[in-house]
Image (cartoon, rainbow, N blue to C red; front, side):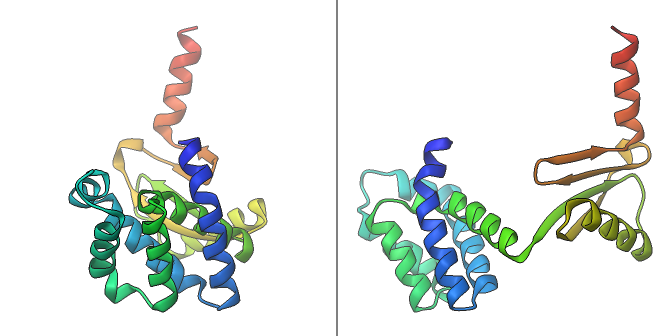
Length: 178
């Protein structure tokens, strides 16, 4: 995994710097997400790892599939990745690009799991508290999972706040079993 990150980092940085200069961060983020999804497809994985297909064959397949999402510059980016045999790094490039983007925009995405449906006021309060705690603008996606019994689980990058009833019961169980 570290090797793939090492390979992807200069491409992600170059893509980010171009997108920033061109004021196209959102467009490049969308293009990378789509392209990474294509590369992650099982059929495409077979094409990209098969010794029977050249880098040019792989490039042509990617360009054909992604043609509606590519402009001239992003098309050139895909061609560069194909020429260097780096198309399989696209998912990691997307992750690194989005990290650079969130650092630049001072944003962070938080995933909230709740035992019950949250209303807009509750979501807004959570966003405000997380923004204050993390010092960055927070975007949230909320999922309902009755299995946590009550409370919330909040995940934002490497921060996890488990305020769920099931989490507290598990901690209590661990404490009692010691």
